[in-house]
Amino acid sequence: MIPVIALVGRPNVGKSTLFNRFTKSRDALVADYPGLTRDRKYGDGKMGEHQFIVIDTGGITGDEQGIDEKMARQSLLAVEEADAVLFLVDGRHGLNPADEMIANHLRRSNKPVYLVVNKTDGINEDIALADFYSLGLGDLYSIAAAHGKGVRQLIDVVLAPF
Ligand code: GDP
Ligand code: MG
Image (cartoon, rainbow, N blue to C red; front, top):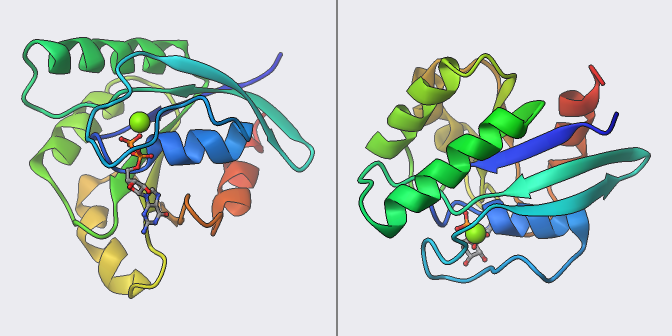
């Protein structure tokens, strides 16, 4: 069985960037426009000896109407399909009310959830991480998806049980 990993979080936290790093594909839309990826997207993930399926999602804004609502529904469906969930937050912007809403949902999902603080390249990691402990999701994983920092270590932890 190939494990399935879902990437969830607010728009613009770097989900598609991480998806592309896992899949080495250019297919996921990565842009500075929050919410550009609107549907679930599946990719074949490979990292060292690890193989997995990764699901990219459009994001959850916490203000769900119209397009936002569709994106949020896709994200929740991805969580249901997944064996493990990577919950991405933005280490440059700090904690956001939508992050708390997503954390509450994920806590109820009964899936293994890994809180991933992205974009910690070139900033003080301790300060970037400090905000997010209050989400109560246990250990934090600091990465920079755009540069690959921390990504291999993260996937080693996430896939260890499989
Ligand atoms: P998504 O909406 O969650 O899929 O986010 P994207 O992957 O589209 O990324 C949103 C923006 O964040 C883009 O401008 C990316 O280049 C930028 N970004 C993603 N990962 C990193 C990172 O590790 N460091 C920095 N500095 N920027 C990043
Ligand atoms: Mg995206």
